Image (cartoon, rainbow, N blue to C red; front, side, top):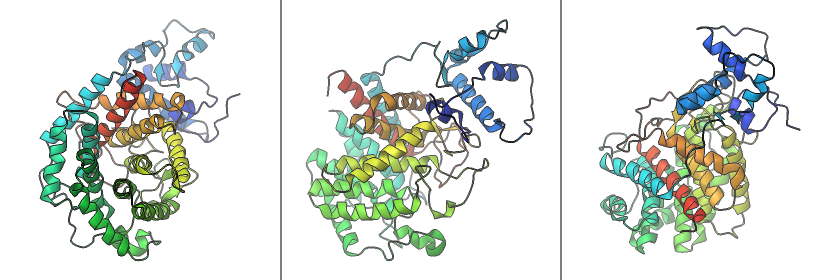
Length: 462
């Protein structure tokens, strides 16, 4: 018997979670087509929020596939009681009508072509130095280069993708983006993961030497009061520590990769200790999501739900995947990371929207209805990685991966520009289709290369 859904106000969560559901397709279609404005009044707890979420999901499906919306619309003459169940049966997870032919199977060559298109456009349109990113190796560039190096590792003709990173690496002597007032900021450490990947691909220890030198200093000079991650008490000094969830993508994969590259577990042990400080502080064990930082404790969205930022949680789950990728199978804490990864994966899949994308606000998508591609890229990458590495069941998670990828592709123009990417920020915000940034492209590349691995494996190819 299906579960009852008390308290659930999200249509995708209700349907993807396989809860008991009373189909309202016919009634909603009649509502939409019979008037202009409606006022949803009391009584309370009568399903108003769920109704609006259902309409949003139907509208998103219509935008993603107009033919699907036409197929789903009830015929005007069909008014009998027996007609509604037949129409309800045409919906799968309440998102896209089953009467629409399934999308073509994913093709490895096409995935690679789409990945190259985005990578090439971004390389040709790297932001010019400005006040916010003066160096070309800050965290926004680092996120792009993470995807760039995934592409470089996947194809034989990778010279231009490696060269792009090599140029800036040599310019900065394989060091991080300089920061005047601190050497501890996790954002500055993000570039090291790509330097180390380049060192591995080219058997060039020099490219990893800067990371080793920097982290050796860090291990010998840890930040003061590492357990205090409260922004209200510490102010901006708290950025010396991993006090915001984005940090879990920035520094931990660099430390884990350096440990793997050098065989020195000191780096992994330091990372592990700091990771769980942050997680114990920011991870909501009920929602299985991370607060961005302590400033959001107790704050609520317009619908009364807690504030959980889409990209912030994308940073985290992608960071877990990249840490696990470099972590030895026998590392004592590995099971904790796997459990965390599975908890977050299950939650995020339940929050995926009908068009395959996630929203800027995970628990209040109605307030921020625009698709957001950077969170979608990171989530899709992490889910694909989990399936490829046996941590997530393919039957349960691969449909979300495919849906995420197809959703991302709808925001890539012919030249390769990825749009609908939330600008630099720290919490849910409005997004325009023309918004783009490096980290969104990097997430797209990571997702595409990981999905291509699965497609090639299914075809019996490497």
